[in-house]
Amino acid sequence: MLRLPHRAIVSLTGPDTFSLLERTVTHTVTDWAEGEVRYGALLTPQGKVIVDYLAHRADGGVRIDVHEDAADDIVKRLKLFRLRAAVEIARDEGLVSAIVVEGAPDPRSAKMPKRAVVAAAQAGEPIPRWDALAIAAGIPEWGRDYRAAEVFPTDINMDLMNGVDYRKGCFVGQEVASRMKRKGLIRKRTVRVRGGALEAGAEVRAGAGVIGTVTSAVGNEGLALIRTDRFAKSILAKDIVTVKDAPAEIEGAPWLIAEVKAHLETPADD
Image 1 (tube, rainbow, N blue to C red):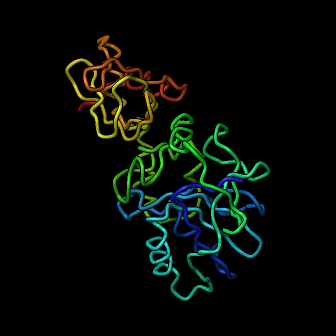
Image 2 (cartoon, rainbow, N blue to C red):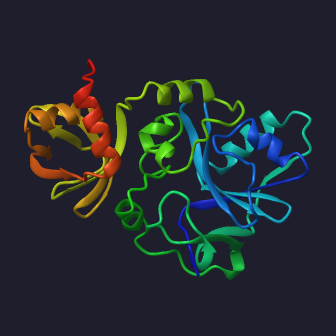
């Protein structure tokens, strides 16, 4: 059992817990089995991610596994939305997020280890090289790759990782999030990138043009937020992708290949 770094647990208990989450967060809360983990976020009314998290369905409520810097903010915001609902919302200092062999699958990727919420006294040392593990799985994370109100759900691939239920009832930011998805061509995505000059904040270029920015890196592997339409044009032009003048390679995940083909078939203006 290894403790996850920079995480905190927010507990929600009470009979109105699920109705509160249903009208505020991006993921569905129906048919949620005890022990199951769901990925979701709280959005601004303009559809940007305030914070994303992994929510564990527990006996008597829900435990939200969130970045420690965002824990107090999500408590405050959920309390504002609570109104007269019978829900207790609090940061639980006695619990931590941990990697556990018999834990619940991470809904974002089968490449990620299983995790659980455990008593702080039971947890071991922080897991080493966590950033490298998440980057290798293609998982962007709050606090490392972005912070509050900087990205839309599709920018960080939430729609590809079971993080947004576009069919559920209204939630905060749903109108914008749904409209972006219905447009069909997503223009920004987080992708895996490899190269010898990777560092957070460095420009990703194709030929003479900028197509994105590295958001995190460990060694020669990293994540970058890129304009997929510009990347598609660079492929057509046979431009070389570089970071800090060094050759780089963007991983051609099946979903990215499909989106690049769609952009090439339906060119979009800058």
